[in-house]
Image 1 (tube, rainbow, N blue to C red):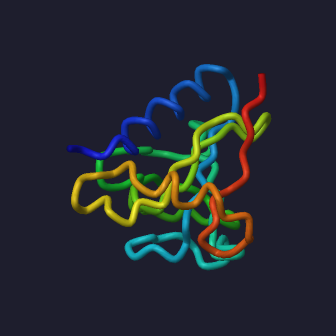
Image 2 (cartoon, helix red, strand yellow):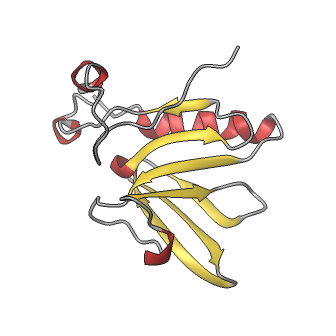
Length: 135
């Protein structure tokens, strides 16, 4: 079965933009294939503004998120493997979606890991970001 992550990233990104808010990606900077300026990495993660006013040529496909953005005034190509995307959310209110760490994504199961990490309260590099539902 195909991974649902790329479909959900596209849908949540579109919902955030249509709501007039600023979509951001939370990315695991330790994943292979990630191409971002090293200066943008903090604590093993990268937060990327993917709003239409901040990036050019945004493409969210089943394998990668790619775009061109300015870092320190210099345009650079950014490549994010879909498996590195930990969350997509709106900067203004934090609403969006987190994704479980999918160690079994290659075999197509895709949705495993959600139960494994929910009970772990110890903060570490592999812990999920803390987003909450706002009603």
